[in-house]
Image 1 (cartoon, helix red, strand yellow):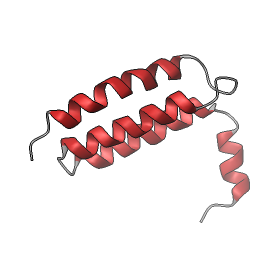
Image 2: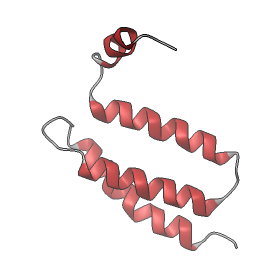
Image 3: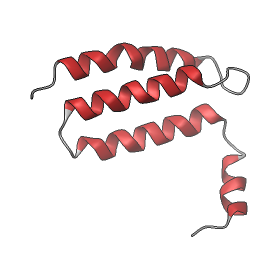
Image 4: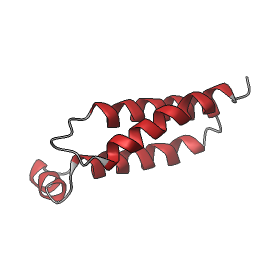
Length: 83
């Protein structure tokens, strides 16, 4: 387990949008192994909501548009998934 000071010193160099984007990318890579479009669609929708709901005072506006794009893509992925 890493001490909290190491994690805090790492996270101070980045804003919340960059950290959320890293978590989103790592989660997407982890879910690709499952091969399920439905789970991937739910993942996209959840992170789209997280990006949209993050306060804009601490997050650049580009991540708001990324969240809106993910919210649009998520239902399409879920609907086109096989049973």
